[in-house]
Length: 230
Picture (cartoon, rainbow, N blue to C red):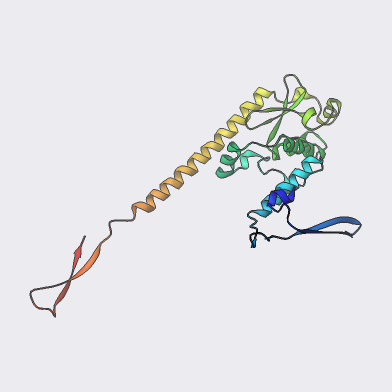
């Protein structure tokens, strides 16, 4: 997987296994030299690619993914910057990562309050479902079954989260999200307008350029004056 991602397929490699602090792991070293073309293989953005491979392995084996590897878009959108907001709109999110986010939120909570907070950090809101007792909603209004995505039985959800009737309905939560997102979008609009005004103000300060030329007057070559010429 790493070879393919980095473009190092069929390159010579060495693998070293060793044990440290009771943990056995391996180090792999690849040769970057293309012997046919006699040049080094370029590795652009290799750190990002290796991070993607790590994330894929965690998802494939259903391991608990460290927060540092989780998709950065899986967080409270009200804390997005304008650039992050635009990126989140353009790109989709792997459903496996959504599932991992739900499971991680469940794992790190022990009651309704802490679970709501954990979901909110990952960009989801807890609600009372129309057909299911407990659901989560993202900022786009997509509804997710907690029992399905968190992998928790309905009885376990009820035991930790309490009476679902005390939660806001899907419609109510969507309305609350819409209001919050509207305020956030208004902030982005103001930010864009301020940036545009600042840029235009800077360009307006640049007036027409002038140049100076030397000319000889009728008084003789020793007397020179500067005449402005546009």
